[in-house]
Length: 360
Image (cartoon, rainbow, N blue to C red; front, side):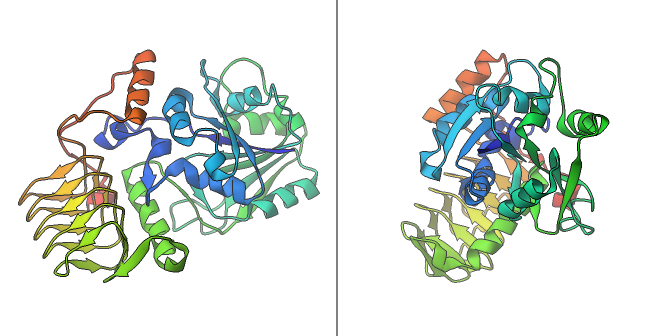
């Protein structure tokens, strides 16, 4: 049996409104949770059973994904009570269900390479482990050639050799250990894109990349129609006097009013409002966010319920909600889990700048 493992427990970026808004695996990338791209990649590669290792975010991730039926998969979850590291989690998840083969993928990745080909190559090589690495050019210059991309294939027997206690990483600990035991570890070199979301800048890049693929195949989307340069959900309203320029994706129940301009690449969530004379450019707006009359937002991220006030201008920022609204079921679960873990959930009302490469 081939089993999938999604490593969705991540290091925090350090107190930004973006990080406080949602657990990273649930960040919306063109209206889909980030972790969904890794799961669909496993499913499309023929894997129907996977474990999600999300650590302290396990409860909200489980609340969102459930048992995986909507994906056509069977999902279970593992929460690392003691810091065990990626390799430690990998071993622990296989204690109750031995697998002939294990495919590991980081939950912050959007992979595109042919998983079936990777598995066939691994099985034909007789290796204990296969490490997927970037080709000579990496991906868009973001990943150095020869660098591991965060995708691995392991024999189940090799995983059983991970120590039962202590913190164990994959790249720094487990792979070198296999080599010391004279077990074969081979690279699988790919030129296919495999984008990692590791901060606000790469988050914007991920939305742009996925958006470029969607707008190129509008026939695959149900319930969307092309208006101007954008794709707009049938339940949304776009004024005839509004302008959608370039690659723009507008979710359900959103309103774009007269003389408003949206310049792509831009992703607008559900239930948003872009008022008269407002400008949204190269940005991502999450659900229920709003841009008031004459407001401008460029190269930025507006989290759920964020507001760009009338006449204000924001470039290269992350905007969080200004007012606390009644939490959704998912948010309530997240805060309950955070409280249980002794973490303080902050609601930031101010905008903070993105890294220089975005705000420049």
